[in-house]
Image (cartoon, rainbow, N blue to C red):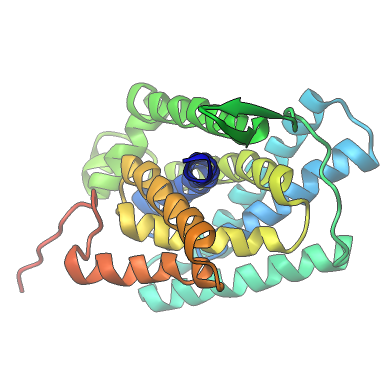
Amino acid sequence: METFIQLTVNGLANGAILALAALGFVLIYKATGVLNFAQGEFLLIAAFVIWFFLVEIGLPWVVGVAVAVAVGVALGVVIERLILRPMVGEPVISVIMVTIGLAAVLAALVQIIWGTRPRAFPDFIPSDTIDLLGATVGVNRLWAIGIVAIALLAFTLFYTRSRDGVAMRAVADDQQAALAQGISVRRTFAFAWALAGVSAVFGGALVANLIGVSAGISSFGLLVFPVVILGGLDSVPGAVVGGAIIGLLTSYTGGYVGGGLETVIPYLALLAILMVKPYGLFGQVRIERV
């Protein structure tokens, strides 16, 4: 029972962080229809930027995170304006290849600027342990779950209640109708990428707090794809549920089975859901008649 509780908490914590990272992916896809294969590199850059401002520059935590958020927003807007906007109207495979190339470029830039040596991330949440139902669990895991829950709630309220959030939903549903209502589609596209940058900052900080600042963060980001496919490419609640499922599957497999199978199980789950529900658990089913 003790092992089960530990694995459950660890899995939920990892799943919550994955859900936050997947949120940026979902927002971009819902608003623009672009599959961003550079989401893992967004997390990597965000972690290194926060580390740089906190450790190298010595800024206070609040100021350092605020500057990192500004950098994340700027990165998202620049990528949308200079790289993705010229690709409007091009075949989907061309846009996908551009985001894959973008991922390689961003990873190379991180190596050029900061090298390949892993860094210790400054603690910003408690790292001690507590007793939970007879099991010893890390407080940082519980904090991660709580922080992500607050962040996802804030994003949900923004997406459903704010003017910009409603505009993003309108553009995702029908761009021509949104244009007729006076909504700037281009501005909404840029805003979606900016929000993806913000989610990457918080997701990158939480991942770095658990595993340190290294290239492994982008590998963690690869798990975003099974999460969004499982939950549904265009579903925000699906990202949360998909993150929890993938996090728990990975944790239970690593704890009870081992042998490296935990690195494969998310992609087996991806294949399974594609065969049963191609649009994911909460994805919108689209039927095209020709």
